[in-house]
Length: 243
Length: 327
Image (cartoon, helix red, strand yellow):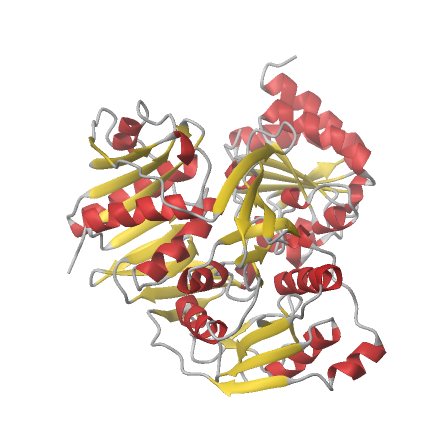
């Protein structure tokens, strides 16, 4: 699970020109990991077992971990570092190192973090652990020690069957996340969180600079109603030259 | 040290994806700057007669892995072939289109090669032989410039951003084969289920007609389908209409959906919230149709019509039929 700024937050570039100023951002569970967590909780409700949340991030990640515990996770491991690394392979190596020591059947990730948009960590961890993995899944069925996953791809979906343990990265449609009740929020405080300081591997990718995208020049109102349609077609053909 | 440039040419059935041609054209540009060869790696089924096509876009050598079991993307099979080709070529730079398969595969390769990936790049540069990539983050709210310090440098390229160009029309590349020996894998790729009659994916379409909350209900998307058909486009949707259950998530354009960059994007009954804007702002031309003249979408659309989508869209379809001579 990754702690990310809420998608409604305005993103500000910090004064060093190569990092994001998150001082007034609201932090949430990465939305794609909400789908993954809900899937994990549903699997627990159906098949038994327990749900462990593993996260890498700064001290303040605790607040977001509490939310995952309220939403049905049983315990959590917090790999503490100053800042989530910019290099996804550094994140993957730290997570894989921890996961090597845990026993599990199903390892779920969100398909990507909505902050760095890398979409790499899930399948990297699976490769490091040497377990099968399927990315961008919209449906998961588990029975008799096997999993059938549906991956969303261009123009349709691909069905893949695998043995367990296996890793999956969640697409938006995987599940509909639930809301935590006040009782669950209170109960979450009693659930165990193991905190460990983590050693990060040296990054192979560095941010050189960050910029805002160039502003899109405002366009023009062609007109009102159906009368404007012929003018629009003429402009698209003669001025914009796109038809 | 400067190695060659290796580009993965992804196929869909017995043809290459447009995004593959885009990546090869860009790979050629980098190979010329570095004065090295460009290799294309073609993986799929039924590609034997097609492989030489990659020469036109600039590939000097095509490595071909052609086998019925490679028709659909299989992470383990594709990874093994790619690693074999990489060992053969020792490339300095690897380019892969950021399709669902490309985005799945690139990080896997990175782990085995002890390197990392610059994801969904929109621009590539070289600095002292190192790859500097521009890539959007925070759903396009900012652009990061990143340097890949490990070798080989891997970058995935966002489809529809780089131009595919037949640079050397008659060029016949050298073709090398990889004999595919199917590795043991716990994963079995069962089947591909197409979604409706949609021919093109949103990320590959050059014309997209999207509908939002203003469409009023799922039954009304028919008028957008009709316009899309006339224009050879595909239909997209805003998050509001997907969350309402009117359209499948695969149609969603925006921060939690697809990021698209077609030549023409027509937004019908879409207000233009930030979550939608970031998914389509890089379209070449944006047209907005909305009855609310205050809708934020008019602030960044190139052309706007203030009016009722149920009147304007059918009128536009009629006008386009005339334009394309389809009446």
